[in-house]
Length: 170
Image (cartoon, rainbow, N blue to C red):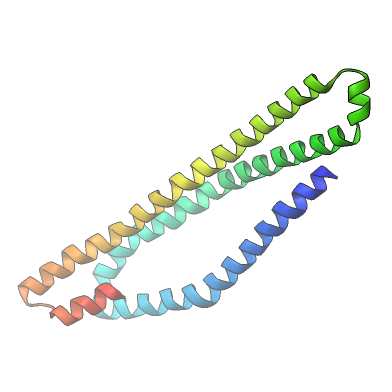
């Protein structure tokens, strides 16, 4: 029952988040990214392709770390399931535990299971928390390239400030 409770809560939340983000990415972000990319290629094909390299690296890195995030997430959910199952068994067998004097041992076992759950959840949080800033830095490299190159084009008179602003916004 504890395992089912843990799965129901954890899996439903993950499925909901996945469906919501997938629908948003496909119908909103993908269309915008493609239209912006086409507009940028129209204005400056070479700069657009060079500035897109960090995005490709970020996508590649995200696809490579996806299995690791999935594994850590699974471990955290399984640890939560073990805690829930143990708590349920402990509550149902409270009288038997008292009769045989096993309260301390079961409390220690619960503490160990909670420690394992905490460790698994922390590993997942550290991984996810570390990947997001890395993705942000990699993605920002393209913007830095655009600012540098576009700024030089404005100074040389090749671009107007308006074109530079429009390109940077895209």
